[in-house]
Length: 61
Image (cartoon, rainbow, N blue to C red; front, side, top):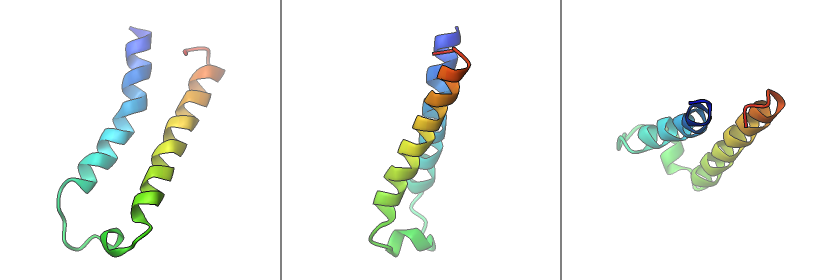
């Protein structure tokens, strides 16, 4: 059960970000910026890395 919780908490923020960008808003300022996808990918990598570090410190992973 603990492994399932860890995997879910790693993928939940990524699913939320994907949901925001999949809604086809026309007034999102990031959509017109050419670097928005690279920033989004970097944010996703940082979120997953921080979560893995926290889980390893707590010996959950």
